[in-house]
Length: 234
Image (cartoon, rainbow, N blue to C red; front, side, top):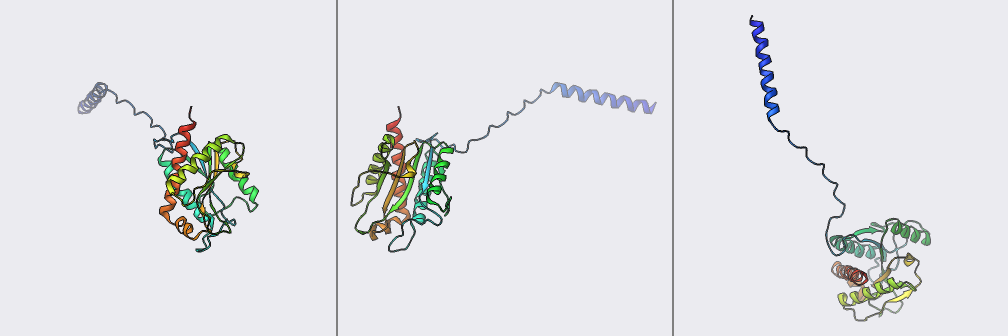
């Protein structure tokens, strides 16, 4: 009799728990969280894909500063990294040709071809190649922008960029954008090569080595990119 009573109590307890469970409404499942995009910054360049080329690298040092002995490749990368940060903050997706002291090939044409292939495979819609200038006459100074002859969109970009660099840097010599036969500018997208200043000029060399002046260069280029898209948008 005692055993049957225990069985009856266990059965009653199970029924009570079942009744309570049926009375509590089911909690809806949480929806799956969506994957967050890599770049979420909203800004004037949202959705734009830009390719930044820090000229030279690796065994190819480029020009060498006359006073400090610094190689162009180092300064190119410093300016390009500052520009990258500004563009990301404005919502752009940025592809870098290099983020360290390296080259794709010791053959110059193959190295440039690899950079262009990286821009094309990333579906970049603009290419900016950063360089430093030099000349035998050490009095030469000032930034200068180059574009590929026959490319009208690149000509417009070069003109806008040259004006922004003049406004942002206030150089003693104001130059005009020029066309040139640069292999690095051969993609069918707006492309410019920017000579930021002359490492052969002592005063300008000192400025080009300054992080503050490098930031001013990057900001002028950043603003030029935004202005170009505002002018070329339908």
